[in-house]
Image (cartoon, rainbow, N blue to C red):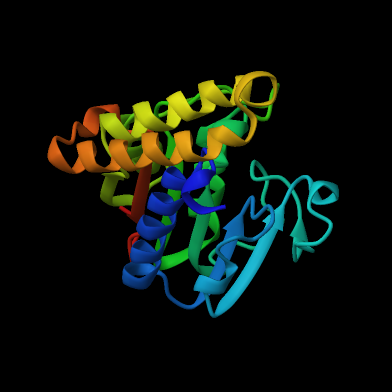
Length: 217
């Protein structure tokens, strides 16, 4: 639906940042932890998707079923580990990061996106939100070298997206088909304002890139 959908802007921005990071850092054999419907599989050449709730995505056909807290994968077996919007849904996120670090080959990269400011979703399995410093801490705790923690947008995009989701509660009862143009107006305005004055500390989402050292410290 493009701009007529309430989540168009954040999905567009996320896709842009992830594609950039994949192009810059991803190499070789790739494991997607919590692949869901595999929306990013096309970005990788040698791709393996892992999903815990395989019954939820029957059309995606994940290659591996298993938990992010105990990856059913051998040590140092992947050149790149990727995970998008999964970390907040595990009760022990530090274990997930440790597991992803474990299966990375020396010199391999972890690409991970996670929310900072966002509403409850996938209830009741929604446990955490992360600052840039929290993500850096989790990666370093797992023995990884942090290369960047990039905010995907600033205050205005976050505010616009949250306002669209708020209005969606009234779509059926009050506005109906008029909501599409309203969503588009809000999101385009938010995008323009974010370019005019961006406040990264109020981003809705971060993208972490970290590397497993060639040698253990």
